[in-house]
Amino acid sequence: MRRGFWLLALGLGLAFAVTAQGQPPLAQTSSRVSGDRAWKHLNAQVNHGPRVPGSLGHAKTLAYLEAELRRAGGRVTVDRFTVRLEGKSYAMANLYADFGPTAPDGLQGGMLAAHWDTRPVADHDPEPANRAQPIPGANDGASGTAVLLEIARVLGETPPQTPLRIAFWDGEDLGTTDATMFYGSRFYVRNRPLPRWGILLDMVGDRDLVIPQEGYSAHHAPELTRRIWDAAKLLGYASYFPRREGPAINDDHLPFLGAGVPFVDLIDFDYPYWHTLGDKPERCSAKSLEIVGNVVLHVVRELDRQK
Image 1 (cartoon, rainbow, N blue to C red):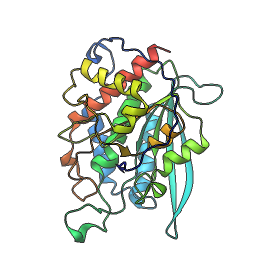
Image 2 (tube, helix red, strand yellow):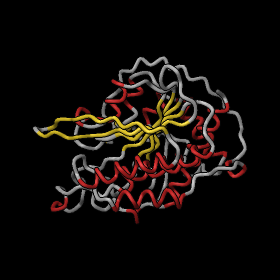
Image 3 (cartoon, rainbow, N blue to C red):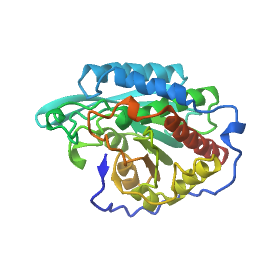
């Protein structure tokens, strides 16, 4: 992902009828996201090594994700595709885990998503000698993936009444331009049934967690954005989700916004270790993963009740 420097020509006309109904805090419900469990998923990914397509760490993490999603009870699909960049071919894979009922004509529910690959170069590292090395990707890649694995566990125990897909994108961070990034999400929009709404988790593990309303999301998915920040306030997390607009970020939600799907990007882009070798677990926290996970889970449950 990177800051957005161009305006979306969307022509959206998004129809997303939502209401701000007060719901009981998650503490009063039977299932919560565990920050400790999500933290274990974050560390497992980092311990596999950088998850650059074609690397050993990438292969190990793909097997880990598939095993964990099946253990959670998800109906798992793997989309394999090949990308060619600068004369080199990269074998990539998106993973999808479906929960709740199966829609007869394909996905007709919501989507939670994150990218699971890591950047092949630490191009923002303060040490020039480090900039050709791949990043560890604790926050940038592993954090959103870890939260979604834990949400999958909760959904497996208490399935939604409407279809919900958890998607893990590959190739988000491979290149340097919009044309050479976001491969997994762009592949999905071209080839798979679109969701009714979506929430993207990217860089949500920062120890100093502050998630403002991402610019494109606030303008092109305002109702879903409002619902998420209402949930954060209701759960006592308003200080972590300030109700102000942050920068517009070019990220995996853009292909969906361009296709007319309300898709919100949850991202804390104020992270000094972005695209550096310093993006390690000690810069993240289990508490941040738990906060984001429970806000997202609350919104999922709320939308499911309003089916």
